[in-house]
Image (cartoon, rainbow, N blue to C red; front, side, top):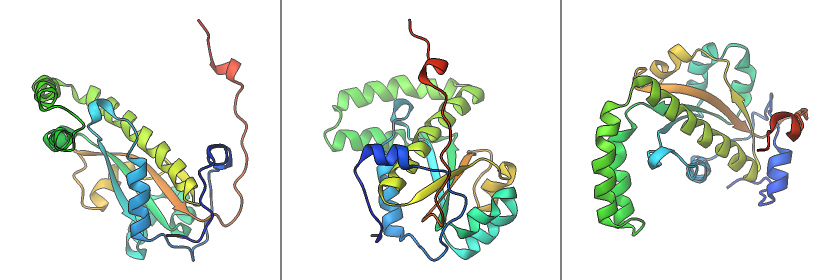
Length: 212
């Protein structure tokens, strides 16, 4: 566990979150706590609960050195952070359907007949779905878990930055993943901020909302 202030104050989590550019490199997050952060983030919703998100947690110096040349203008925040979480979306996420629904039955979350109905209905759907539709679905789901991860990190007393500027065509293979199966979504740097992030303006609700 960390020595920083944790909070359940939702307003502080939401309004206190900033996109952090530099971190205190002396601060490390234990793998035990990082596991807890990921577990909490993974309570995010996903299409038919297929949970297509996959994470590579880059917390070693060797891992960061691999990432550094791929991180473009984000190298400083990558190297000073406690860790970088590379978020991917799994094109073959249905491979885990039997485990997900079977465990749901075992834990009493779902009747066995509902599981069988779901599997019977979903198997042909996943066999027939186009690559484009699959990509759109799983990238959306991975975006949901990513935002939740950043809020969970804030609740644990850490700061984050969502990074889109990196060599997406190379990232999967750099960490031994099949680039055709695992789609890069974003990098999330996490650690203790070395300085306060900047506040940023948000458009008024009336500018972005239509009421019908």
